[in-house]
Image 1 (cartoon, helix red, strand yellow):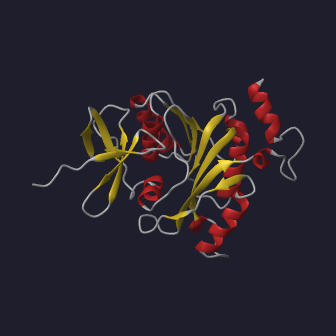
Image 2 (cartoon, one colour):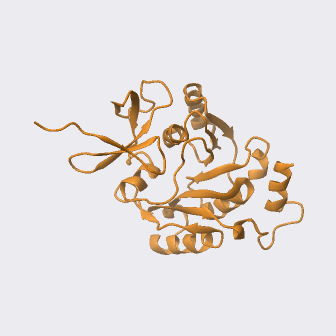
Image 3 (cartoon, one colour):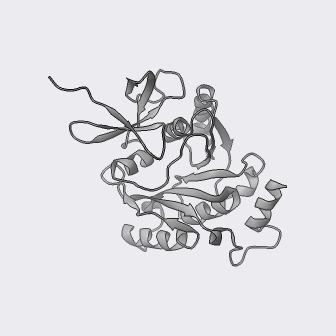
Length: 255
């Protein structure tokens, strides 16, 4: 008789679970919102709670986990800024991971997915939707406090630069960054590995980075990379205009 499939909690994020199935290890999050499923995902009961399947085909963060990501993850009680939340598929799992004591500030600039995000937030009280453009962090400075982590999933040529700008603006000391790098949006002058190398070099000036993970076959020409902020991140970058220095903005938030 086959033994039942068991769930193992993550040592780094207690609301994240892994389960070894026949073909691969799957990942699940503790459902903070009430069933039914938010986007047709599988549900399972374990130890008195409902778990939601974290589908790597629908989420770049889940694909990173499926492919062996060993870097930072949202965890219980934390505040995260999510840039490019869209309709909230991955956002809802990040909300599960930070739990009822945490908050996800979910930023989206397009109105149609933002309206779906608003509907999702009715079921997830720890998701706070923010309508805005990730290129303009000063515009939502009054809506987002200092956070423990920034997750970036935007299809923009300057996705690395906007990730750095938001990290400087909102991260607490020792905060973490996760970037779902879409190399197809970064121009044709370089191939995917070259774009990855360039992004790693730029982020390495302000973060202790973990080994990046290729998200294929789930998301081709995508990588998950990130790490923990160092003091160098918060130094004034060259060319920053007076009165708009990230360090000034952070000090103003604490005053």
